[in-house]
Length: 105
Length: 105
DNA sequence: ACCGTACTACGACTTTCGTCGAACTACGAC
DNA sequence: GTCGTAGTTCGACGAAAGTCGTAGTACGGT
Image (cartoon, rainbow over all chains, first blue to last red; front, side):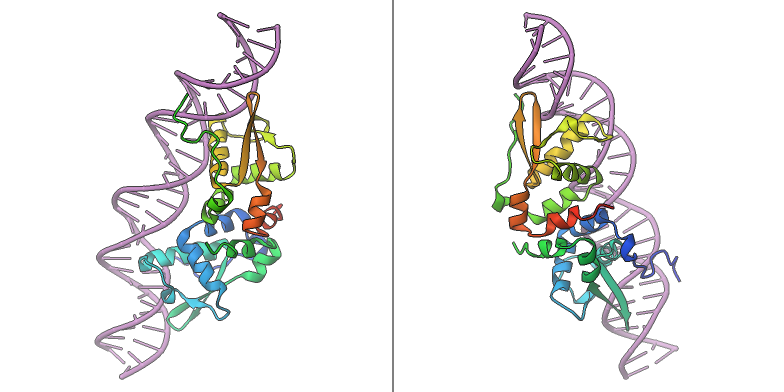
């Protein structure tokens, strides 16, 4: 059953590092994902995201976002539903997420 | 006199891209620089920054920040004084900078 | 003019990162 | 059970990024 190295592990709020968050957001694909998640309270399955990258690349980006503490991922059937960890990010870095999302250019 | 490729060129406010800003901020050395600049209205010379990297690396990071639109650099004698482009960043991405700087951890 | 200080330019090297395809696991439906 | 769908894992690859030392430019002081 794999190595369990990152079997849906999420950092606690106090384990989230600003450097990792910024790095996670500093990629066009991941930024697209975050923007999509920001418009959905229910969350979005990886495969339902409109991205022109392969499946494995999608997995890679979602994992990066998850390990950075930007998104929460929960299994649901055969899917993985991602949601933005808005409350945690707002608590740690008030304004950061809003500022990033304000850049609709 | 070099190639003038980036002779203190700064992007206009409307040329600043969020992706470049986030990438610029997503490095520990540059984050240190930004935090230092945030506490100084007069600006700081590259050499006056407390960093354990070489001179050329310092130049590299300051250029990255400048080209991303995060800092403004002006010559002053033999020094280059860097200042945070707080107004531009706040106008484009309100809250972003404050959020990043809130992370004093 | 000379010298020292402050920084930049240019390679070079190493590491990280984004990307992919192929093989694999997990779950639901039939 | 079989099949298909949804994601993951594992290398592998090329591109980008951080680091450095050396050499060079620019400016101020003497």
